[in-house]
Image (cartoon, rainbow, N blue to C red; front, side, top):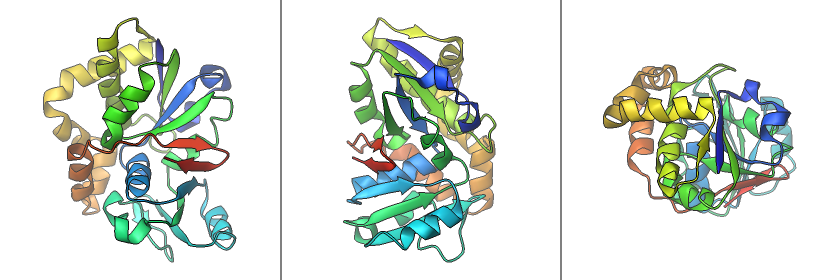
Length: 234
């Protein structure tokens, strides 16, 4: 298996994802919210890039929730923001979720040449590993923060890589090797590292440290969400 890592959504190049299994990561918080929503019974999640597109789509979809954030804050007039804790079963079961976020939802539209696109958070780590272990060529696509590197996404990729290496026959790109080593160096204080990242500090400033704690301690969701034709389903 070949493993690569892309640092941010803005750095996705067609040649680096073509024909590969692409794994989208936005640990804090878009992919964690998507995984939570689907695990709690949402019919599907429709990721969109901008607010107006989300609003327009909401007028065309029945039984939907209009959700998302900018700079970590719920968009005015939307049903929900981007806290995974808001996506409880009683709120999202059998609903369609239209989601737009500052960073995470941009990834999906840039992965059209990938063989398949899956959604990864620490919440569904075990399910993702079981799915990926039979693949030949994978690339972790970190959402990043406004086009730049984000430590929380990168170290999440590193944790997955550390487990996949146990299966043998793994070839790491230089970027994947750095992600792996970054995780190894910080695995014993992962929570503090993620909380001290730019994204982590922003959430804490917004009073959402509880979201980080939830994401770090709830690795039990046995789903592999797949993005196809503009929709994500488990």
